[in-house]
Amino acid sequence: MSEQPKVRTTEGVVQGRRRQGHAVFRGIPYAQPPVGALRFAAPAPPHRWEGTRQAVEFGPVVPLSLPIDVPPQGTDWLTLNVSTPDPGAAGLPVLVWIPVGGYLSAASSDPMFDPAALAEAGVVVVTINCRVGAEGFAFLDDVPPNRGFLDQIAALEWVQRNIAAFGGDPGRVTVGGVSAGAGSVAALLTMKSARGLFRRAIAHSVPGLYSTPALARQVTAAFADRLGSAAPTAEALRDIEPWHLAAELTSFNARLHAHRESWGRLTQTGTALCPVVDGEVLPETPWSALTGARASGTELLVGHARDEFRYFSVMSGRYGTFTEEDAHAALELLAPQPDGARAYRAAFPQAGPEELVETVYSDALFRMPSQQLAEANAAAGGTSYLFELCWVAPALGGVLGACHSLDMPLAFGTLDSPSGTQLIGEEPTPEALALSRELQETWVRFVTTGDAGWSAHRPGGHLTRVLDTESKTLPYPEQASRRIWEGRFPAPFDLA
Image (cartoon, rainbow, N blue to C red; front, side, top):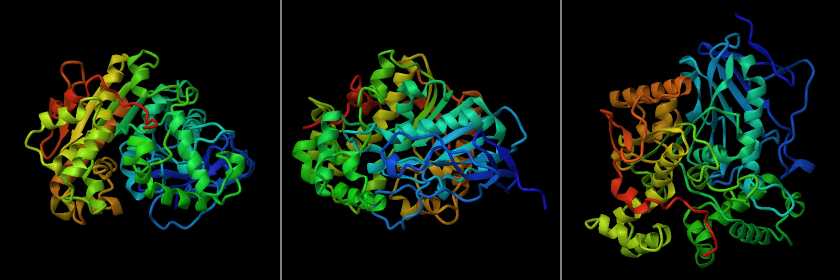
């Protein structure tokens, strides 16, 4: 039996294990546990240790604000995992994956994000845990905002210090994520403190979830009041047990609709505490920063699924039940003002309430922010590769369509993970296996060379890789929606 792999990091020696032909190191701290006096604070540098630290188990999951029962775990939340083809190698490309969902969950241990296939293909993969929910994004008066983003930067700094010891090239780091993880990537593109920490970016299904300080302050105050706190401060909330705080946020999110008249568009997202455009940690939205030449473009692989909203409507039991009243409310709240609602009805004259609801939700929450990030990045001097996933998930008789997150088990090759079987079925079809290979090869090519393998997205051309049973490079398929949103980049949610 071969000796288990060891690597010396700047904090101490870690010992991992061999798995499927590559080396895996788990639960490595990149910052101190954010508890006690450090709770709600910016991440503090990790402690050094003597001897050899066993790095074979995932670190504890951060407190999740989701309607699922997850038992509380330890408090060493700020950890990361490294999967490397060979710790003794040099110059391998690196992918740092941010597994954040809805700014409510962040579990690097999710089997859907198992990096084994990518490591086998020659990529060093780092997956991170970071703070989410109230711990990461509550807008508190006496601590830094957007602490979840500060955690991500601390992890990227750890990568710069240490990844060469695992065989990776610190000059060839790609940062990636899906959904709120992609929103995190978009934010990192514009944050001064993240400059120089990565070279390329992958962003699947970018959301436009950002709040103004005015709205964030009011929302956090209402949440603190629910908890019996006199003020929205870290000092007032620090004694509330973290998992209890997360559970309270879950309940608070479930009642967002009651605040529609005051909080407007935010109430349609299910996420009360999202990143804040605070002017310092996050100076402005990614789209305005890039188009205004206040951030530089990069090599960017970005895209979305065709039927983004279908997953949420099916899983919530609302699919097939939307009424004209629902369509009117969705258009009034989510379509760009002042004439977006009229523009949608003119662009989709045959659409019934169901199609209108699905189209405007998919556009406002994911499709247009993703497409516009490609345009904004190109305008800032970067190279953008745009895709749309149109392949239909086989599960549930195909009712899910080409839905949100379907691309993740395909890209990671985790078709047999719980999420993979939920979307693709117990026995992947030959078409699923072929598309998974294509998307994996695209990722590996991109993180290695910066080229996704098809023509870049340029003004006027809008060339897009349409991922399907037979993938093709075509003009952007959602032209009607693109025209409605042209020049109307996602703005931070504000008080209604």
